[in-house]
Image (cartoon, rainbow, N blue to C red; front, side, top):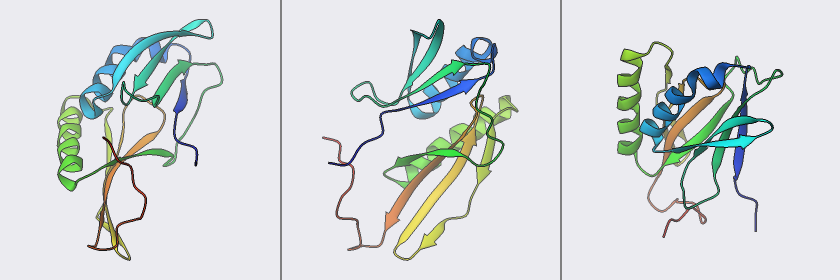
Length: 151
């Protein structure tokens, strides 16, 4: 069986997590429905953003003197089942941006590659990477033989 995504740790400069902890939890909780939990780790209190309490998938945010610096388009992709889900999250993101100029959005035209259309946008707020929010639409009869299934 192939490996699965378990977690990602993102490091912020000393003081940034503590200064923005509540806003990070609120933004990503509202946008993606992630739970946030303060966790003791490495002599500090990290912020664990759980994508789903039923799975072991999470992003751990900590502070470090040597922290990630990602000025490019480094990102983590988050896939949804439908275009309407992506569009609803995009609308929430735009509403957040209206009240917080630190919310950054990159809009993209649909990308058509063969039988697949990717509908996506990027969002970044208070964390050092972008999140690529997308769905993939397959022409009828060309769906991949393996796909995530939630039961």
